[in-house]
Amino acid sequence: MMIDHYWIAFIMVVSWLLGVLDASAGDADLQYRACVKNCEETGCVGQRCFPQCKFSMEGVSIDVPWYMREPLYLQWKQWDCQSDCRYYCMLDREKEREAFGHGPVKYHGKWPFKRVYGIQEPVSVAFSALNLAIHFHGWLSFFILLYYKLPLNKDKKAYYEYASLWHIYGFLSMNSWFWSAVFHSRDVDLTEKLDYSSVVALLGYSLILAILRIFNVRNEAARVMVAAPLLAFVTTHIMYLNFYKLDYGWNMKVCVVMAVAQLLLWVIWGGVSRHPSRQKLWVVVVGGGLAMLLEIYDFPPYKGFLDAHALWHATTIPLTYIWWSFIRDDAEFLTANLLKKAK
Image (cartoon, rainbow, N blue to C red):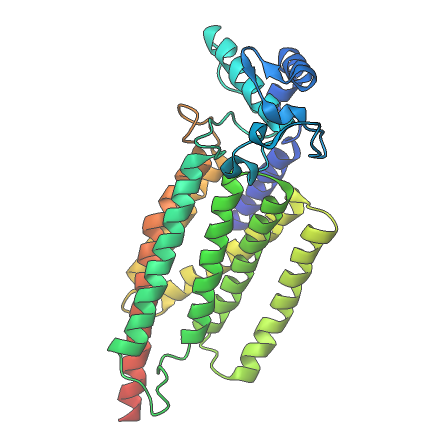
């Protein structure tokens, strides 16, 4: 009962936080609003003027030569007149607030991050890229173990019956962290939907994989029966987010339920099984649970770069390494058992 109450409270807190995202103190500030309005009319914030403000809000050129346009590496991030006006007005307003001893506030639902080479949240991008690299390393070492170190059957296939499922998991994980890096580089409608969709797909598939592995489902027909309803739900949810409404509160509830379900499954299985690497599983589960606290304890970015979300990305790097180590150990463990039975 205590666990149920804890997660209900967690969902309510997160939903409330998401509900106030659009009512940030920063963009309600009158001085900030006046600065943005003036910038959109003049194309300047103080001594800084932006050539992209010579374009209409639809991106149509207004008699501006090609050499006055933004560099290509900035164009792909879609920094337009409004974005730059908001960004530099935010920086100026934060300097004024700091001079009066006030702390940072959110603008349009986000903390005041400082760009680096046009990248919106550079630290989160770096940690997302590192997570992608660790997943690639983990999947590659898993692949080498299966097909070059462990014995193969007569058909040159791995004895480990969950190999293909973990290959798909590796692809979905790398895909998710790729879009996380893109989204933190530039938060626009498209990158946001791709990031959210990839996370939902990964969580849904991970839940399916957890059920199949924990309950040792080997029969293909049984696997389809388990996976089909969950795949249908996840696919419907992704289509809902992309083509109907990007409902942050509902999406958070779906993601939390899927994440908690698989965490509880792994925890229970780790407690009752005699798996030789169950300690690694416990480290990942407990570490992942503690890391989620960073998503609740939100604080402004240190020096405009390092915030709670970025730190959460950092904590998943060592946990990912340990997780793939557990997967490799599981492959060795089940392969050895199958070969013993074959003898």
